[in-house]
Image (cartoon, rainbow, N blue to C red; front, top):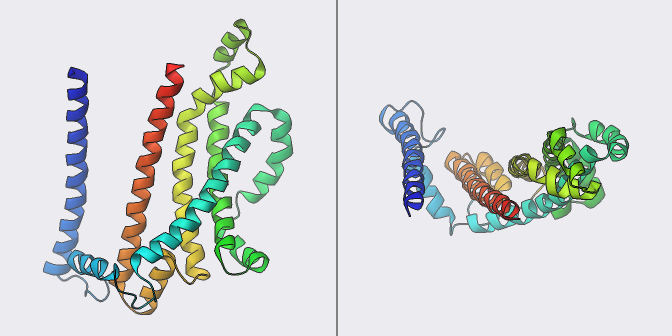
Length: 266
């Protein structure tokens, strides 16, 4: 009971500090724009103007032809598809590259060639291959997500201490048992860090793709807000991406704790 109370107090303190930081930023924002008038609201809107636009955009289709929930669902559909495929490929690929010298030698030249190329550079080629639709955007997100997952999974497995593997040898573990019972549990924090970094990369790639070739989505809404000189709409899109990213990050953090507890219980 005492431990639970302490954890609850720590959580409450953390939430209060977090809320205070957000409120402080909003307060400074309001003070600079609405009181000092450092910028006109047509160029840099205040927090109340953005909040008003946010509420209006929930039902209004002006100026981009869709409501905020419609744009959000369109972006989520693309992001989750590309992210899921990227994770399903990237995490196993990173683990295998770090664990097997033969896989590493086979995949590394291709990976080192692809890794420096930004996701945006692939968009024209994917549009030519798949046309304008969900596939080229999902493909760009897949590449961006895969790179982050591979790098972090690879690093996590490489950080496994040789002494721990020697202990596995003492207990007669096979190579597969050492991988699943020693290396992967040790690498778990790095793997989940990769998943969280990949989620940010997925949203970056999605917005970039929607800015160039899309008819819906949060990136498209931001672009249309810029064309219509509605800075508040641009802010709404940015804030929405931040909120959704925060929710996904919290889910991944919760999953990391649950998986770690499950492995420790075993």
